[in-house]
Length: 134
Image 1 (cartoon, rainbow, N blue to C red):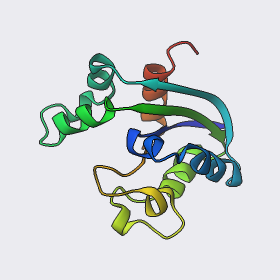
Image 2 (cartoon, rainbow, N blue to C red):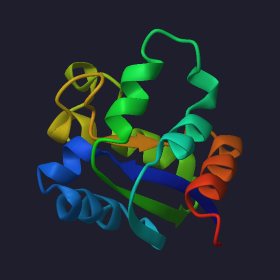
Image 3 (cartoon, rainbow, N blue to C red):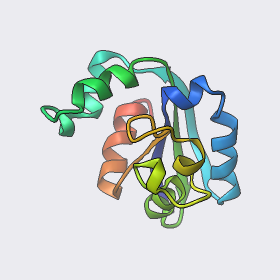
Image 4 (tube, helix red, strand yellow):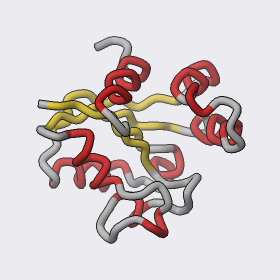
């Protein structure tokens, strides 16, 4: 079994989409193995998004991710990373396939409802950051 990380971003939690997104995970045979609600501190956001430091969108991304409640979800499934990326859809909701999370719930590239790890290596790193207790 593989694991991956999904973050339900503040714009989605503010719109009460947590249950709908979790249902999509379950309907697509992901096992939820860890789940928590939290708010990103400045320090946590800087660590999590360190690879983007210095890019034009970095400051707005950090500000946005600190703006409200986030739901962190560790999922497990064969081929978890790739299958989760498929379910999430393209970064830009306007380009995402119908039926994907971002197509259904994303508002824009910056407000695309969720984050999903892009590789097994990223999943391992990101899970340790968001769930240091496991």
